[in-house]
Image 1 (cartoon, chains in turn brown, cyan):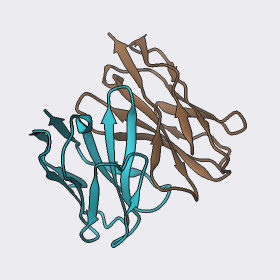
Image 2: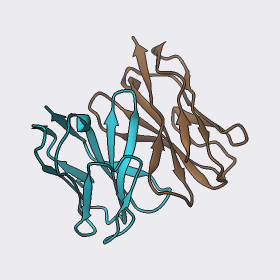
Image 3: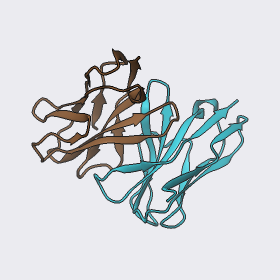
Image 4: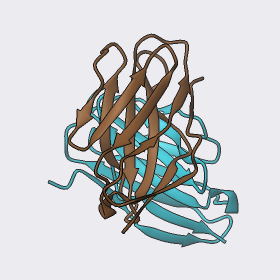
Length: 115
Length: 112
């Protein structure tokens, strides 16, 4: 079974700073997908970014980018020019390319952006 | 465009009562999922349905049953609720394996 580990339960940074959230995973598969989801206080799960394991290029979405290190099984999220609206829980998630269906989530990182 | 709709949003049950959580999606997705979210645990998969007429167990299926009524609807039933089932429940759908999952707003369930 796959596991996803987020080692930072909580982080706090000042507005406009850059912050990096860590995620590591364990799998024996070669084909899989990785995601970062944001959950603000409204409880809604919002996709931040998606990475396909066979693509070497790191995914980016505006201020959000990932550092995908396949050999190290690491998938960190970088948020540039952080904004107050970025305050939320962030979940790293793994999706098998051929095994069991469904996402495997990490326990989350609570990110607080201070004004 | 509603996306994934869950009902109800909040529910309080007494131990031993039963209830069904409803979920519907209007995106013509094949795959649908039920997750539960507990404090400090992230989301865990309860059941999933890869297509109409099929369902499979996820990581934490005990105490739950599901029905994929048609392509749009996927319900989760608690036959005899227990305090350990106090949680936030999310329904999700996806077009295909590896594609982004769309989530409903969640149901906060309290079993007393």
